[in-house]
Image (cartoon, helix red, strand yellow):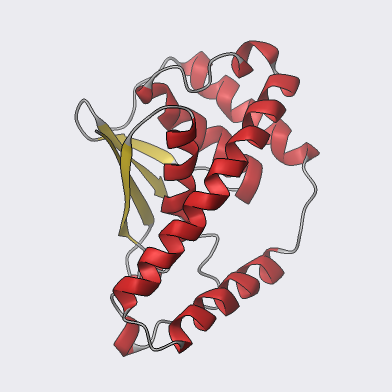
Length: 186
């Protein structure tokens, strides 16, 4: 089930995401992807099991997310004062804010939202901005390579008062057709 918001909310979120992206400084996507790959490789070379590396990526992402939320709120407040007052006023509104504004603002991509009951939703990205040039070796097939994104979302949401569990359930590096991140309120 796709999130059914009014068209005006969705289109205003999309416009705000596009505006924020256009005004943000850019870095090469290849440089970003390769730098992230080096970080993951460094964590893997310590011979830690994939579960520990995945947990480290989640923690790194969480720390990033607790800082990104301030940037997100200040930029959305400046670009559109009426949107900035309550982009995360309720748990369901966070789905649209993350999918159409936050991901666009920081990564240049958007996501579709799939509602998973009353307390959850999934963010579905047709392209994984972290997965260019990535091929997991067989011994790391269970590595949650994109866990830093789940951690960012968790850190952002917890910083604005929502207790959540966030998990990567599909990933293009695992051979799936998309990247799907499940967000569930507690």
